[in-house]
Image (cartoon, rainbow, N blue to C red; front, side, top):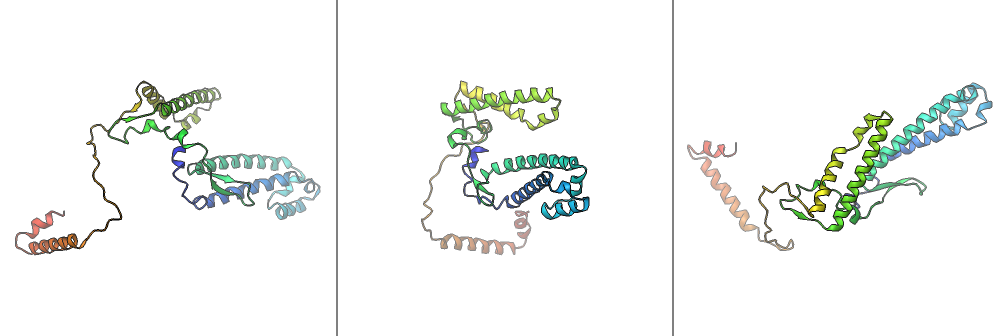
Length: 256
């Protein structure tokens, strides 16, 4: 993913996720409002009715009356909302990262901006275990790219093993489905092969190799009148043949 972020800088940074960002910021404001209501000492000294009206007017929140006799209800509400906000924020952050975006909170109004986390040379070869079908020929790989790929594969395998151990010990085996162990194993296998022989083996060796042909300058002008006239003449001849007895069926069958 990080590799292709370098090719997406031309995309508009805010249009695609504008609505989702607004929804996230609105929810964050609601969390702040509940937090403010919970820590407002004034509301605790009010009557239930006044507390309810005050909370709706100042914090745009219902349930202010609970602050006068059961503030733990608001504490529970805040805890649930904070957990929900953390999940929303994590999901949104991951989503925008695919387009090399991040949230700029230093502005008066938070907005999305392009921000690439990794240098291209550090990530350009991290998908080599998926490039077997990209070419009908084996592809040579530099030692520097092999070293980066192998180290990343080793680190991924190490982290995955630690995560598995922790999730199994804490009886959270369902979370293991979020770890792509198959991809990690493939990456490790390819890393081992690359260290023995520095090339990506093609998985399309049975295909014919396309040889380069001569190209033409896009700025060159051609006289298209000749081929156009030729095409019109052929179409006219086909129409005449279609009108001949016994020919129409055979001609039509070519287009069915």
